[in-house]
Length: 93
Image (tube, rainbow, N blue to C red; front, side, top):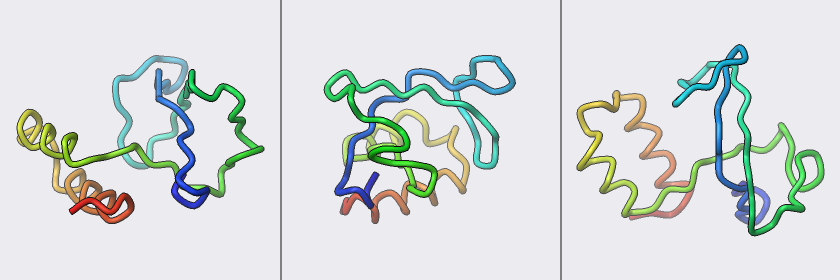
């Protein structure tokens, strides 16, 4: 959560839509996510962050390079626009 001093909420361990587990979720989909933080299990929704905060997947240069190398043909233009936005959020050159 960049607006909370870069708070690391945890790792998404599952995504569900209509009670069924999903591998991914596209923009606009109503899904439930399970987030686990083994390093700081006291982080609580409603206490340190809430629905007013934007949550972002952590991104770094190595993960961008991996996307380019292994998933370039599977990602859509909108996905690459998100990568560009996240580069700005995380200050990646």
